[in-house]
Image (cartoon, rainbow, N blue to C red):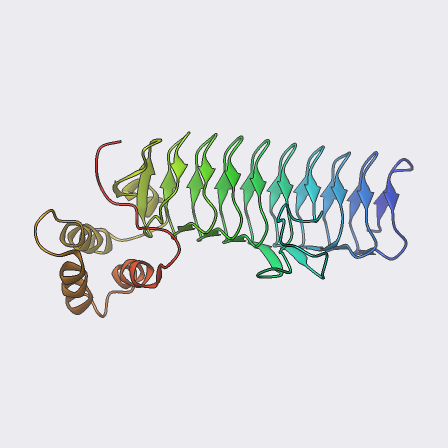
Length: 264
């Protein structure tokens, strides 16, 4: 199969390239970069730093990866960026590594699709099968779960957590944690129920969705104390894996408030 490098590309001799890698015109690949089997850099892709790319990824023009984080506390220490298998990065995507002032790595999962002009800042943790739509900007130290779709032109505040199977509507300003399976929309960010369409697409059963809805209605009811309602759901659904993901997500948050239902 071999390795195919365009004559106009600059690939450092110390870069590690697996079989089947294709590097197109005017790409730049630094000395500490590792590209797994089948990676394709279409053209004008710039990869620097300690960056590891999983198999069968495809990166389009003007993708920039692994350059120093935009963190004023970073002192130039060893940091890294890891991108999982089969991830597609469209034009002008920019992803930074970790920071030596905090977590030293940024991790992007498998089967992600980042559209034109998206950015993931330092210390990001992005799960598998995540879609970032055009122009979305993800701040530092953000955690995004699996099977998440974020609409176009969204801004995700630093330290925010987004749970599994969440849908974020276009142009939403995400400043609060979004529970697993939730939908959130609007500049005045609110929780708009559960992402039922996404749950069905992911193969959740009617019974699972019914229980999630029931738990949601209890947790976010208008009457009573929030902590008491959460404890009630935790006791009632202790053996329900999906409901407990919501409960644990809420209990473990400490940086940003939880996004609640309301009017956008």
